[in-house]
Length: 419
Image 1 (cartoon, one colour):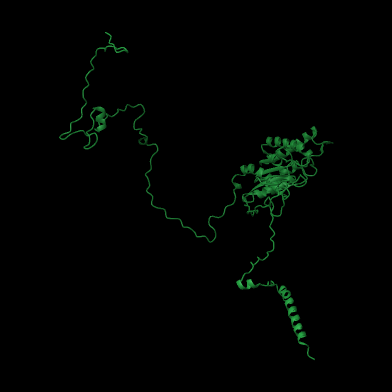
Image 2 (cartoon, one colour):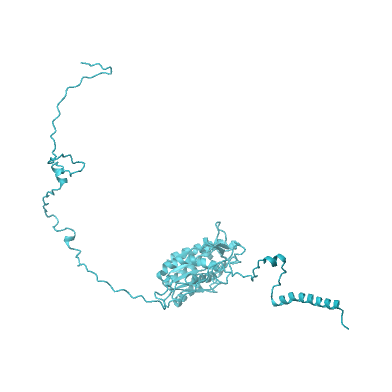
C-alpha cells in the first residue's frame, strides 16, 4: 500500500531540515566558518560585513634581568614597577698567554668581587682575574684559614700583577689572644686584629706585588655597621702603611642618610637591587658595582693590558688594497743648523760694523717729505687744475711775517667808544 502524498512530502521536508541542521556541525568539524544568511538588500547590492581578523595566540615577552646577566633576577618588579629590560652579555674574549693576573683574595665578598671583575675585564685579553676566596674566612678564625700565613704561597703560585683583598665581614666574633678569649672590639682584640691585618699586608708587600684593599660595605643588621666602620679604619691605616691603596665602597651601598640601601643605582645609574634578601650578600648588580670601584686603580696599575681586543685589520675574504707607488720627491739640500748665515751672525761680538749710507729712493713720497714738492697731478683727475698749455709745477709760497696791529678801541655793552 502506497503512502499518502502528504506523508511523503512531510518526510522529504523533515529530511531537508535534518540535512540543514547537520551542515553547520559538519562545517565546524572541518574548520569552516558558518555562512550567514543574506537578506534581500545584501543580495541585491552585495553588502558584506567586514571580515574579522584572525585571532592570534598571545606572545609571551621575554624577560631579562636588570643587571645584564641572563637568568638572574634583580627583584625590581615590586620596587620600581617598570619593565625589566637589559642588554645581553658580550662573549668573553680569549685571554693571552702572558695576560696579567689580578688575584682576588678574601671571604664571600671577595668571591662576588671576583665575579664582577671577570665581567668588567671580559673584553680585555691582557687581563685575567683569579679569585682565591673562602666564604667563612677572616682574620679572627686563623684555625679555619690563616690568611697571613697562606698569602705568600698563593702569590708564588698565581704570580699576580696586583692583589685585591676583601676581608672582615665574618670577624665580629671572639678571638683567641694568648690563653684568653677576647670579645670583639676590646682593646686586646683590636691590637691583635690590627697585628694580623698588618702581617697580611706586609707579606703581600714582601712579595713585591701591589696591594689594593677593598673596604666592607654596610649590612642590613644595624649592629654590624658600627663594627664595619671600625674595621675599615683599621684596613685603611694598614694598607697605606704598606704602600697600598684603600678602596672605600661604603657610600655606594647606603642612601643619602647613611642607612643600609638594598636597592639603589648600579654602575650605570639605573635603580636595581644591589643586596640579597638577607641584607648580607650581593646580587649580580651589586657584585658588578663593587668591581666598578676597583676598576680605576686597577687600570692605573695594569696600564695598557686593560685595552679591549680589536678586530683584525683585514677580514677573511676582504679585498686587499695594494699600496700606491711612492712619487718622486725633490730632496732639499741639508742645512747646517750652526751656519752663521742663517741668523745673520756674520761678525764677531764686539766688532765695529759701519752702517751703510742711506740711498735716496727717488719716489714721490720721498720728494714730498724731504723737499716739499707734491707729485704732478694726473690729467683729468680732481686735483688737476691746469688750463691748457704746460702745467705749472706746484711750489710752496713764502709766508710773510705778521706785523703788530694797534689795539682796537674797547667798546662797552652800550656801543659807546672809550678813548
